[in-house]
Image (cartoon, rainbow, N blue to C red; front, side, top):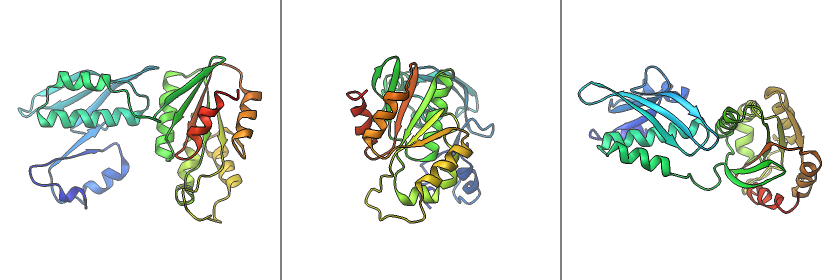
Length: 261
């Protein structure tokens, strides 16, 4: 409905790497659509993604107004994760179609430091790095973990996950169970209800067991902030990456670890 409201002179810029987007393309009545992604059928193709510890770069191939193939190399953004590549590409495509200076667009993206709570580094101790991230949806979690793993394949990744909203975890139970494949250990915190009434369909132990099974990883449950700090203090070694994930109290907990470990 939203895309069909795009006026004739406007454009809808859609990522066809998304299975859901591909499904609705046939249902869209207007044809003023631009597609992008790694998919070979995309109008703007993302190529040669290179993940580094502090940045990600990619190339973009497309046909200009004269039907000539353009190849823009080394578009750089100071963010991790495939989702940030897709977001950066979408922003860059908007610039192209508005006739912006592409050199300025590249420089602007390279300077962009991201927003708070997107792999925000909280502190380091004993060669362990602690991060805080707003990820509370399976797609976000999977993308963050894959991005971190791509640039740190030998380092142990510990996810400190605070489930957010009963409705979300019940509806996306299967997706949550599969999104921690790149995490060596998942620490499950109490669910943050965000004002929702308790849903008796949600069982934290069952939820945790499904993650352990379908993500092939170790999972433990902590009851509160004190248990979290005690567990990490006892079990952390060094050169590990600890990522707090969630939209509730977890950010405060990650900051508090700095004074408890």
